[in-house]
Length: 558
Image (cartoon, rainbow, N blue to C red; front, top):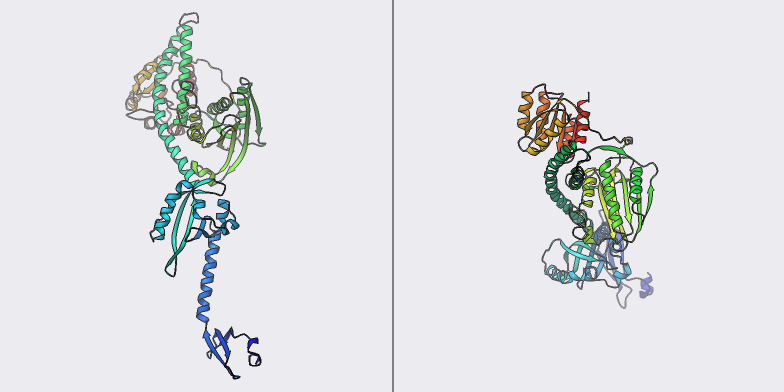
């Protein structure tokens, strides 16, 4: 009615819903115009229902895509034909340090790719534009502040009306993946070198056993006034130093433990630091220990070696003096924090040793736990200190991390599993030689060890029977049935190893007393034998006093 009075005052097109004859409600578009010179109008009616449904579906699809893209933890993007970003999700802005305003002003793909990868990225862009599928490609991405990180990128072309209009794709930050791969590679490398180092240390310990045994026997028959006495004592000390080196090698290579005790690491660390600090007055030592610190089960001798190596490393990093900060605290580690080390999550005790020294570059930091690697001049160090630290901590079910910056300093973080047991107090024992008269069967595949072992045991008053290897040892044991009071058994033998020999001995006499001996330290195989009933372990090279003590402990045990 209004249109007929004033044609320009009413809309000539609008949408509305109408009900069909069947009762269905549908969407319509109507266009209306007056017929000139009349009061009549003409109208066209278009059913818009299907079109509206298609538009709603498209809008919902676009909203769904944008919501999903916004929520994804990785970068999702779209670009125009010139490589300018037309869409990026929220995580992208956070990851790269850009803002929406930066995107609106025209950031391009090349702005987030490191310059060294520009040429390769441009070549890939041309290939994708031509319809080629490239899959995932690795590039070095660059943030707004210039920081770089490794990334995987995959993109596909966008076509509209048959024309190429840009790219759509995603970018994944693989920094953590790269770090895990690097840790795995280093671990495998250290394991391989460790196997070699362990074999060398084992054979060297057998040689040292022969030298130390002969020196010990000579000293037993020389008075302190003899002109050779002091020289022999010096040789004994040199052999001990050689043994200490092989212990470091074995600590890295096999990670053997000797005597594990539940320990308060706070008190342990403070005692170690005080002893070290007395000789290094130029170092100021600061310490902090958590209240109610959890205990940990450790070999105290080896942990002393760990602490000393870390302290010496800090001292050498501060040639002009400085500060060393020590802390011990309780921490609970998550699965993602321990998975690179194949450990279970849970409570750990964390020891941190920090210095204010010269620090390390990335290349040095990547190699510090390798055996024989040293930053000192040739002849000034063995390069075994931190390698043995790595092995000892790993064997205790823990791991060690390092953070360092040139000119700022270095921090070593040691993580050891916490224990629910009670702390054991240390009971120092006086060294003395204890003799006996029992019969001992000595089984070893090294003639040198059999010879020197026999002389040492006979010097202590024992009757000694020897056997070369495990098979012969069983034959000798059978021939002397009931007469053998103790078996000293080598662990690594070519014909029949210590584990199989021990099992065979136990099947013959369930109450047989066995002292396990090895050039290796107390590793997994030796611990397994001890768990099966073996009475003790002694590592080569050992002195006659150490041997006498172990033998008497086992023989006098009920």
